[in-house]
Length: 318
Length: 298
Image (tube, rainbow over the protein chains, first blue to last red):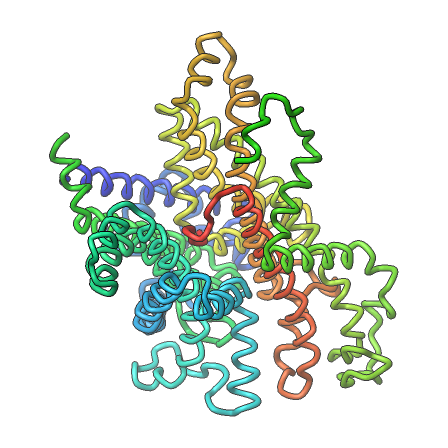
C-alpha cells in the first residue's frame, strides 16, 4: 500500500516536471518572446535590448529553464511584466479569492449532489428522478457564460435582488466579498452539482443491481438500513475521483464564470495575463493550476485507497 | 433473444442497415428523439440559413439601433442596428463547422494514438501517457488562449488547436478500450500469424473499440462546442462581424437591462444545440450499450 502511494506520488512529480517543460517549451516555440509580445510596436533598439537583458533572455533556453525551474521550486515565480510586481504578490490575493469561491461552491454543491444523486437513483425512472435529471442535464450542458448571464438578467436586473457584477478591489477582505459571491457561487454550484449528482446516481444504481444487495433484499434487511449500510458506502467510493476532478476544475477552470461576474480570482488572471501578453505570469499560472490538479488527484487516490478495504488487502497479499 | 435463433441463416447486415438500426434505437426513447430532432433542425438550419436569412448579417444601420422584436425584425435589432434573427440563424454555421472538423481530428489522433499505446505497451506507452497526463493537468483554456492569442483566431488555427486539446482525453479512452480486447484469443492468434501492428489495429482492434471511441467523440463534440463558444465569448474565438453565438452574447450582454432580446436569441440557439448534441450522444451511448454518466469533463 505504501509502495502504491509512493508510486502515485512519484508519477505526480513526473507529470509536473513534464508540465513545466511543456509550458516552458510552449512559450518558447510560439512566435514572439516575452519582450516582443509585451513591448509590441516599441520592440526595437534600446527598449528591446534593455528588456531582453532585464529578463535574461540573452542566455540559452536550457539555462533559462534550469534557473526558472530552480526558482519555481523555491516558490519564486519572478516578476510580472505588466504590473512590474513580483508574481507571488499578484497571485496571493487571487488564490485566496478563488479559494473562497471554490469552498463556498463545494460546501453547497457536494451535499446537494449527494442528496439529489441518491434520490434520483432510489426513485429511478419515477417522477422525482425525471424532474431532477432533466434539470441536471440542462444546468450541466448549458455553457457557464449563458447560465451566468441568465442569472444576472433575472436575479440582478429584473428582480434587483443581488448585485450583478463584483466590483471590489483584488485584495478585498472576506466579509466585504461575501454578498458579492452569491451569484457566482450559484452559477458554479449548478454545473458542479449536476455533474456529481449524475455520477452518484449511476454509481448507486450499479451497486443496487449487485449480488450482495440482492442478497440483502432477500434476507429481508429493512430498506433504509440496506441503503445506508450496504449501498451508500460502496456507491460513494467511486464518487471521490469525480469530486476531485470537479474541485480541480473549480480552482482553475472557472475562467469564464469569473469573467462574467468580474470576480478577481485566478480565472480572471488567466484572461488578464494573456490579454496583456504577460508570459511569465502565464507560465506561473500553468504550473500552479497543474499542481493543483495533480495534488487533488493524488489526495483522491489516497482517500480511495484508504477507504477501500478491498484495495488494501489486494496490496498486502501481493 | 429473437436474434440469436437465426444467427447462422441470416445474412450479415450491411453497414447502412446497422446505422439505421442504431438511429431507430436512439429515436425510440423520448430523450433521444428530442435530441436527434434538435440536432437535425440545427444542421438543416446551418446548411440553408444563407438563403433564408431576411437581411444582411453585417449591414450596420444606426437608425435601427436596439429595436424591440416586431413583425419586421422578428428578434429585434442589436446595438449596431443589425437584425438579430438573421445573425442568430447564421450563428450556428461557424460553430458547427469548426467543432465538427475539430472533433474528427480529435477522434483520429486521439483514437489512433490510444490504440497504438494500448497495443505496444511498455516504455513507449509509459512515456506517451505521462505526456498526455501532463497535458490533461494544464487547464485547456490557458493553453488554448495562449495559442490563439499568439497565432491568431482564424479557422486554420482554431480547428487543429481544438482538435488537439479535445483529443487527449480520447487517448485514454481508446487505450483503456484496447486493453480490454488485447488479451483476447483473436489478437493473440493474429500476432502468432505474424500480422503487422498496423494490420492488427485495423482488422482486429478497431472493430472492437470503435463504439467506445465514437461515443467518446460524440461527447467531446458537445464539450468542444462549449469550449469554442466560451472562447468566442471571451473574445478569443472567431472575429467580428462574423455572426457567432458566443460573440453575440458577449456583445449584447452589457445592454441586456433594456435590450434583452439581443442576448436571449443567441442564448436559445446555443443552448438548444448543445442540449441537442448531448441528448443525442447520450442516446447514442445507450444504443451501443455504453454508460457515459460516470464520466466527468476533463
